[in-house]
Image (cartoon, rainbow, N blue to C red):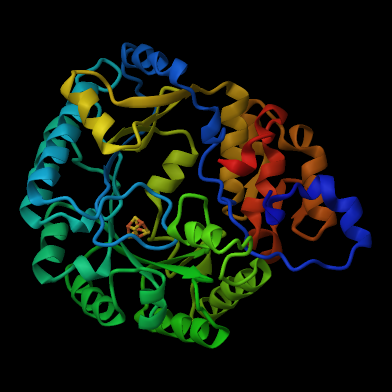
Length: 454
Ligand code: SF4
């Protein structure tokens, strides 16, 4: 069991009398990316996606389109995604063909036919692994299936070492508005020992050229607490990130899920503690980064983000999904959400492509959300923004968070993780920096048992 994800409600009484424990980083996921947890999505609910697809197209639900590109140059030691580092151009082409056949089979159904994308997202893996001709072929075909005209955001994840002037120009030409650069750290030794494929010189070159191309939003990702990270190096990393003046910065705290090579190494050595900083140190490092960015005018807009100009810079994909938008998601292992039903595709490229070749949907598991699930989902995900207004939930779901989550809200206030006022809840910095750990107690009782192990 992962110490850091133990229930704070359950453990509060004993904690009060016990000496403060160091929260070591042990194996497991703490990050809450969706709700209910994926372990509750089941193969026997897959047919519900088909039922949704036969409904008439809604006029009041925004639609997003996601395409998953599972290829990377190298596997990072902390990566828990299914990625392929050995595919040749022909195999990449076959994958894109399969993905487009999959998307076409969705886009022609009544629920989706004729709808335009409000946002588009290319995730992975490494979308920037694709060549410019591959990207143009992919996106031309996607646009024929679901129009992007007028989309509020087209987001694209990029690994700095895959970028050159031709690639960046191509990415801009296909219509990307938000470029997300996986920087993670600026120290070559740390990048190398964590298995990253890129080096610091590539970050600088890619960023400088990307800036000349007029992307509306360039975000850089950092990770606090990579293997071999030190306080001195983290300060240096933050200083370099501040100097770049990106539109936004996303900072994750390193976790070590089970299916990472880092965990395999720990297991082989019989270790339970990962060779990375403890949780309090990681929180302190993120807090330091937030302070440094605030000094130069950035605003902390969530547990993970600082933004230079919050009026202009939006996270359309994130916010739309958290508010219940539909997501037509294609590609191996991708997650989608249509008409209240969550679904996830086959996680391995073999079964994924076989299903498409056989004329079937490559969906592995699904989950029909209830109205209560949707309320809980939105409340917990949006708590990551640091502030929630109770009236919003009363109007949208007919549910008052104060009644639904009385003990949880009181606990946050009592422990100094949040302040409550007549209209809503505001997380303190301390609460914000460990929000994912705290969110598990807001899960419905039937979803708590496995929540820590998804
Ligand atoms: S670049 Fe991202 S997806 Fe690829 S191996 Fe590294 S962490 Fe995983």
